[in-house]
Image 1 (tube, rainbow over the protein chains, first blue to last red):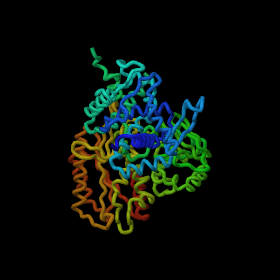
Image 2 (cartoon, rainbow over the protein chains, first blue to last red; image 1 turned 60 degrees about the horizontal axis):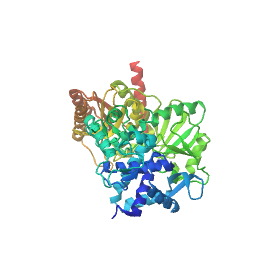
Image 3 (cartoon, rainbow over the protein chains, first blue to last red; image 1 turned 180 degrees about the vertical axis):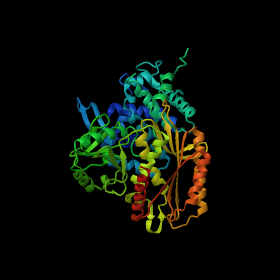
Image 4 (cartoon, rainbow over the protein chains, first blue to last red; image 1 turned 120 degrees about the horizontal axis):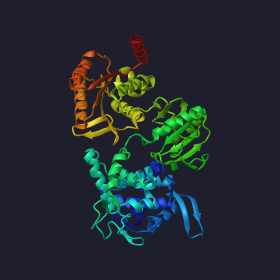
Amino acid sequence: MLYQGSLYRRFWLLALFRGIEAAGFSPVTSSKTHALVYLANALATTYGISPLAPILLKVKKGPLYPQFFWEIERLVGMRLLSVHALEHATLEDIDSAEYSLTKQGLKLVENVIHSVPELQKVAQVQKSIALAYSRNPSAGQSDNLLKRDGNYGDTDIGEGEIVDFGEWSFVNSTKDAVNYLRCRIIELHPHRTDPAIAVNYYAQYLSEASYA
Amino acid sequence: MPDKQRIGGASIDKLDSIIMSGECPHSDDDPIPWDDPWFSKFFSWNNHLFSKNKTALLLFSPNQNSHEYASAPRTFYTIGGCQILDGGIYVVGKSSSGHAKIIDEGGDYQASCDIIAQHSELSTLPTIVLGLQDKHFFYYPNGITDDQNSLQLSCIEASLTLDDLLSSLDTHAAGHLQTQEFRKRIWKDAGKWWAEEYAEDIVQYDLLIVLRNRYHKTHTIEAEQITTSGRADIKCVPKEGLFESYGILELKAIRTFGSTGNRYQHAEWEAALRKGAGQAFSYAQDNNASIKVLCVFDMRKQQDQSCINCGKSECEALGVTFKHYSIPNSSQQVRNTRVAKAKNKASIS
């Protein structure tokens, strides 16, 4: 029960924004937030935790997670996230915005981690993924994900189809690609077993598509 | 037929090539508040700022957004891509590709210090000061208000060779370990010769930064990394694709009294030095390292040579380079060390 529901989803998002803050990458645009939410889901099992939403629609413009944005808007309302550079054509439709964790948001995440030790690992993983992403910001660009990512770039899945890496399907090619990297790294350096190292290399691999 | 060169949409060839050309990051728990790519930026920004007579203070914070001051403009600045940096105070994060929050844009050092001193949250953040000195910049791990605790870093990068490493260690010892400021950090009660509990960790942390600063282009410098035979204090791992030397440094602080006044004996010092030589040798063998050094930081009240000679001969037998540095406990000793060094230098020349 701990790892389900709206409250957990909100904690999960706040922990991700905490990692972005630590990297110094804040504020982060809405399109980058979608990409980061995708990577955090696709890479979660690499660290041994379950993804929250292992299914999404393949769209040319990049990963899209409307359910997470519903939560993000609530977190803004609760003053746990702040919004900057808001652009909207109409009152209802936000074109773009940038988000960052507030002081209260950080305090809340740290209090939760302190009082619910089971969530410490989740927060560590979110921070690790956010750091890897922040070091290689173009890793989340839609073109790079389409060209290179295990799941999102799989040419067997067409635009408008479902990318499923854990809801009904057992195949998570992004995780498999990171595990491949991890094995190769361990062959070269037997003591570099930390999954974060492979995840960082994977983010570099995705971002390198911009220059290829 | 499935493409065997792909994992879903990922190309195995390109995954392989990133391992050879990519940048190995440090662990998420790395104690240094910034990633290695920052070093190159520190070098170029420092020289430009110095030529313009401006300073920039980079404050490393785990949460830039929590520093909300009435006087501070809510401006975020993409600092990563900047070839040159204007003077001012910037709150930044671990990644060099990130943003900075600008607190002040003046660039006057004293005025910047005054602004920071007014805000307790800012004054304790790990801080890099650029532009204050030609070809050197400064690091304050506990913020600029703790000026006893600072590290001067040179804007020179080099390739790792035994000679260069030894000369870096000597420079670091003379300019940092054997100074009044360091004396105040490393002793719990200098008058009684009581060393700080984690004296070795203090030395290791500073050395880690000094070595990363100098060798960041060619090596990944790691602390407390596991090898087959145990944990190496400092490992200098060449970056993939570079035919550079591999280095192992083992650090030992020997002392007469611990932090609670507990006394150490001659046999314990000898055992520590023998163990250190063995560790440097074994870890070097595990990694096929050509550079293996045992660094001894001597905090004993009476620094007799017999145990040092024991460490030296153990190192000689194992092909480990032995370095010995006295850590002074008084102003008098700091002066004596300086004078002895100057005399030694004069006699050599």
